[in-house]
Amino acid sequence: MTVKEIAEKLNLKVLSGASGLNNEINYGYASDLLSDVMGNAKSGEVWVTLQTHKNVMAIASLKDLAAVILVKDLQPEADMAAQSEDEGIPVLGTSDDAFTLIGKLYELLKK
Amino acid sequence: MHFEFQVEGGNFSKAGTASSQLKKILKQLNVDSRDVKRVVVALYEAEVNVVAHAYNGTIIIDIDTEKITIRIEDEGPGIQDIDQAMQQGFSTASEMVREMGFGAGMGLPNIKNNTDHLTITSEVGVGTQVNMIINFNS
Image (cartoon, rainbow over all chains, first blue to last red; front, top):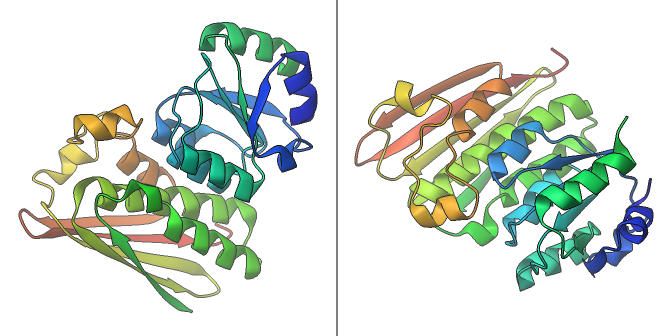
């Protein structure tokens, strides 16, 4: 499923990095600890977090993640949004909290 | 092939820059993607450690057909007890660093899990030296 399809199904806002909307999402990972994501997320996954700083995009890029979803209407900081644009890794936003969003996402992506 | 990168202590906006550049280099060299992934995790964590704890650091990289050798030398507070620092969950990171989602005590375990050889030496009040080797296609 593409980032665009997930965004449409879950009513997510595209906050930055729209050039990556056709990235393929194969599964998801949820964590606010950056080393947890660095050590355990896999390429092609969508990352759900409340962290909004630039290091999120550094990790998303290094791990070849498909997209990042920010929960609770959080907005990416300016340099995070800029790197998302540069890398073509979309940052999506939802008003849902992490538990609610991850539940919906799991239903779409479960294997 | 030999490369060196500088790391600036405290500057989180540049953390991961060396890892990103090395990832591009390894891809150009057609290194197996599984090996690239291991190198990237290990170097990123080492870079973040310098940014989070030290004043400045140098990354020295040598690549041959069989392996990559990475040495990170920093000027900083050093590590008092390296065995303790290696334990999952142990961290001396500041509150600000923890709020960013770093400092969970997972960095050094991530390095250990992704390298074939790891040695750390440190002198308190002077600095830390991390040596790692990742064998290709192991």
